[in-house]
Length: 309
Ligand code: NAD
Image (cartoon, rainbow, N blue to C red; front, top):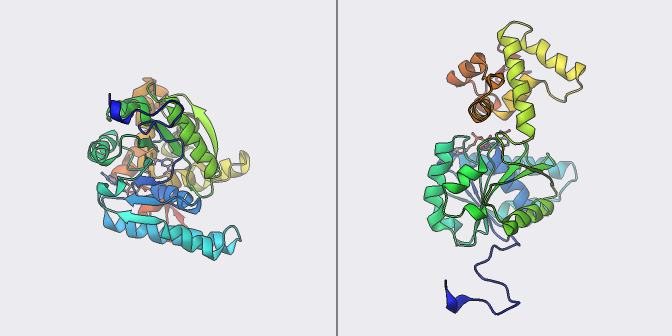
């Protein structure tokens, strides 16, 4: 107990979780991290963006500028807002840059050991009140939080891809997550003009619990020869009125991410209905990870993209 720092009654506790997020840190500057930095910066929040790969940071800055240009062209933001937004993002390769962050959102590769290693390296640099959110698509928030020094300030903040376009953020409380952290994240989501859906901490939460097994089933349909890539995607686009076919969507999400989510569902719920399709495993082993790798169920080096099966 730090008696010297105790607040007078009615005054804010300096050790309490801030309900107002003023500075954001983002770890992982891939598809999701760059999108999260984009929306935070346009909401006027300074963002420190870290990746272990310097080229990922360069790519993220270029992606943000390109996507903001698109928003300017559509009249959604002004040129001045774009410039101000980009100026608020500081790329960094050093966790020391997170010292002032009120909230760090981790959006690194969907592997539990990667995320745990990040938290180990990151948390010594954070102020005690800093909250930590994971953008994980499937991993237990309770377990991730328990691996940190701040389980009560740890929460799931699951943005959808592409972040600047998609309205939803799933908010997932771990068993230890405290109310101020939950409220702070809800308030931040509102500031980012997002709508939240609160999910219990079960494997893959709500959206991916339903969406990714559908994608896995589409890969089974391809594997078993029920239809080719084009037939399966057209069938769901035109027959179920989906915006994207399931294989096109899998490429968009990233096949490694889809596989990790199926593995988490399979292990977490111990039900054979979540068995990852062997063809999905093979594509990932080949490095055919979807759009981000230039090839997945489609070959994106061709215009229009050519089905790979
Ligand atoms: P991505 O592969 O595009 O980006 C991951 C980034 O993390 C890479 O730039 C990589 O260099 C970086 N990284 C890996 N290890 C690191 C480390 N130790 N330190 C710093 N950076 C590190 O992946 P993504 O699609 O952006 O997914 C990121 C997270 O968001 C995952 O947890 C994923 O499940 C989740 N997510 C993805 C989607 C989607 O549609 N792709 C949607 C919602 C949530």
